[in-house]
Length: 219
Image 1 (tube, one colour):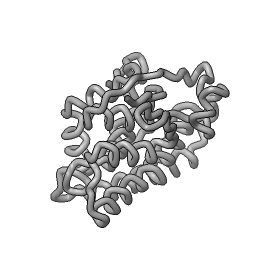
Image 2: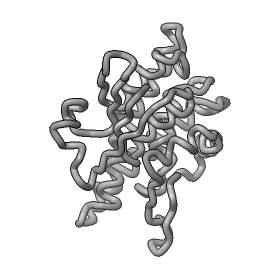
Image 3: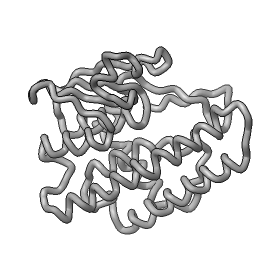
Image 4: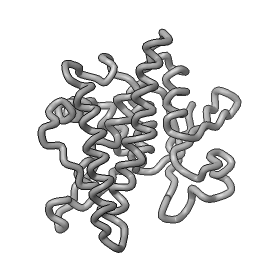
């Protein structure tokens, strides 16, 4: 049994979607970011960095793992699913997982901060991060040309990137003309396991980009 310490964020969804897709039993321990529960001594024993998600594998001597990418690799190897077993195949998937970890996640995170949350609107910063997100989206779009998934078959790389890219409207990133990317988002969004995973531990509600009086439930 896996204990999943998580919150309703793209990094948290990466693990809950994966667990749902591979059908591995897990317990959810919600972490309230607003209350600072990710900084408690108890949580820091599991995750020294004080960030969600983290897991504890109760079937493996209560082995604790932090960092979403490391968790995904561990669970994929443990289950034998969503990660090729040959060296080249695993490397291809890992490359696109690292693409998300090093590019999509940090750049979209900064775009979110400056476009949505920072008290002062610093337009050069907003432009810089939105443009870099768009560039990274174009890389994904090219990779998806003629493919249903990033590495031909569904993998943890698709889950990791999708959990971030699907909320492209929130940081104000333009996806016009990226037809391969948009079709991929919709394709994954239709998977029941993905739908279940993004309501863990609860649905996330965001203000609409186009109408602040309207809310969008990010399932």
